[in-house]
Length: 288
Image 1: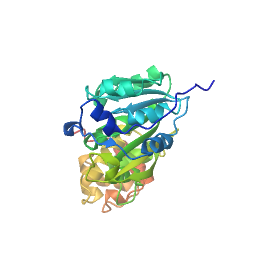
Image 2: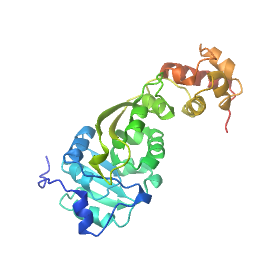
Image 3: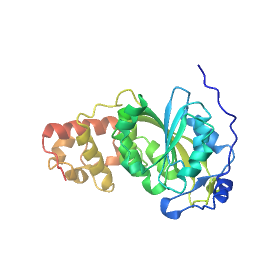
Image 4: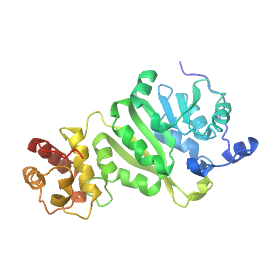
């Protein structure tokens, strides 16, 4: 049965902060979303339905939390700033299926959270820019714990994650994302959409987990080492860069049918997968 939901009314976080005599804290990387209609657009981009269990990274003032909860799903929102936890709890109080927990996302056990939810999670978050990489890496390394993610990120970062392998914009996260998900940039937001306004544009990145990896990479740990080696020193040829992953770099490249003098950023996902399998087959993987 479809739950009966309370009326949804947008709340400007500046008003909420003033009511509690609070302000944005730079050391938490806080930039509160104030653009009219943006929380609803983000909630819709993630596709939340009453059947989902949504996990929000960074509840803040509960602005996005309210928009997600208004779609009828269960919401678990995590907030690191203890001053904001009671504020967010008060803001989502009309929705009994929404709760706010205090904690650090870097300590999150995604597998345990999915087990608690009884299904893969739907993830949301206005991510602090300095934590975007570790958060995405932790999620891509726990792919069965979630099935969709919708994150507000720095625009250039979001576009790099969504870049296809074989293009100049591709990097380590791009390769992981292409292997495990179908990534896309849903829309962009200007600095003025936030309080305080950041110095960069932002974008909403949507990741839909694939039912199976897009390519056969063999041992994922080897794939990870190969990709990191190739993109850590982008200006080097694959022959030289790959030596950080295996002492038999040229032999592995030859076995994969790849020219050793190419750069790693030119490799497609299929070529990266072939190289990963070849490195594993060579049997000499650098573990540093």
